[in-house]
Amino acid sequence: MPLAREIDLDALCVENPCDALRVLGSFWPYSTGRHESRMVKAFKESHPVGEYQPHISELCEFYAANVLRAVGSEKIDWVARVLNSSECELDPTRPQSLLVDSIARQANARAVTHVFFKSGPRPPMRTVSHLSGSEALRARARYAVQDLFARPMDLGGTVLLIDDIMNTGASARVYARALKRWAGARRVICVNLAVTRFERGRDGWGRLALDTSAIEGRPGMELVWLDGQGRFHRSRECGDTRSKSTELRFIAERKCAPCPVCFEEPKRRKWWQVWESS
Image (cartoon, rainbow, N blue to C red):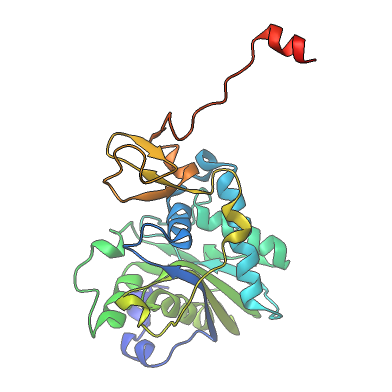
């Protein structure tokens, strides 16, 4: 079913087909020190997931627990996700797929993202002009629906729809409409990992923050500073860190080398020192 031909964008902008919308935390695009912002960025970058193990599985388990906590006592029958801009068919090597599998396993539900496919890859939404301002919702909905298809099914029950970073919620509206009209879903609950924040938080979402304390202390999950010399640091004051970028350490390790001052390896004892201490 070609959704660009079948979905009325004007009606979609007036009536939201999502029965519930939940957002776990905030994504501050220009922040360097907010753990939750760097965390969701690291989640999106971890593709293919096999190259980011075991950290990406830990991150998915963390997000899955928070998604199900946000859903509460609602019975979930199916779990689907929004396709990435470069996907045509469901790609199991993406972190979003790993997250859906984790949620489905914990909720005793079935993954059903294969309802959707696209005729071809498209440029990321952030690269498309005219996606802000008073017509942002309609423009983003048109972007989401332009090459999207749905396979007719008769699912029934409740679908949990997962997306990573929300701007206007247009993608959720498009997918929810398709799930209800052509896949037979009775209810669609959408959960986003984060919402993009602007205007110093004066955007209708209040003081929305995700508690990341349960995962911040795990190996590889701390924030580090990147410099312009191909190294990462524990402290901004160490070395040339005029670049204000930060990353989770497990992402930084794949781009840069650790600073020998910040991450000095402990001196290993000689074999006779080991013998003497024993």
